Image (cartoon, rainbow, N blue to C red; front, top):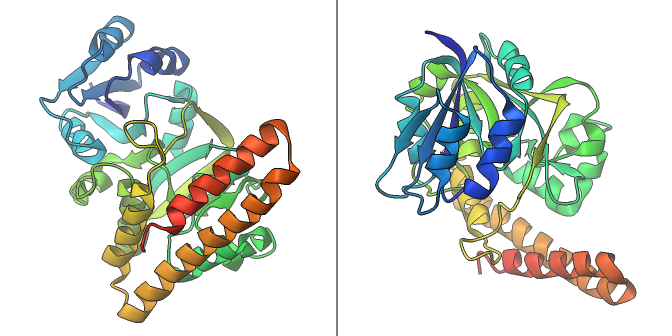
Length: 307
């Protein structure tokens, strides 16, 4: 039976979160759920089968990353739309169907508002061109509410108050896309193990095929982890930043000067953040001080990424 949405959940040792994800989602005759398991060593598959008895399980013999898993799940999908959903993201089926109703014609993807960290920024925004990165790193994005030209790579939540709006990209942690469009692009770009494939997909969609990506700010998704910067052992990683630069290069073919300016903007921006938060940290106390220490440490790692 043709479904409106095929949800693809990529799991890897996700038994501790996937039950809550499926429980929050609920059941719908218009939705099928596909778990692509990246060779988990825990009970992810068993938990999924217990909670989603009509679901589809695709077991992989190796962990080849997020994009490769999505592309394999796409082969089993029967829906008009594909919903990419992280096992630690929580959205109700009716909200996914609401997003699917936005996806038609030139609108190739729709996303809810997914917040992480301190909640001030939204994991959606403008493509990481040189200007958007400059606006983001210098703090000029605070003026994004006055004019879209000042919107940075990440949108600020304070500026997302107009219901449904267009964006250049949104996180693949919860993203509804037109199935035929995703297939026409050959699926997600699997050059990266993880991080960057969602931006690359939106870049190819909005720029190369003139498709539109919509953000419905009335639907807010809770992302339990929200640690896109954590490596497998839980330490901070700059992999996402390297992949962001690679996506910029792959989709814009910048000259050497533009590449140098992009890297310099990122490096100097994070260096400035490290210095500011290092100075402010001793002046704070308690949780606020811990937060500043974390931001300072993270900024230093990112400032060294391209050195």
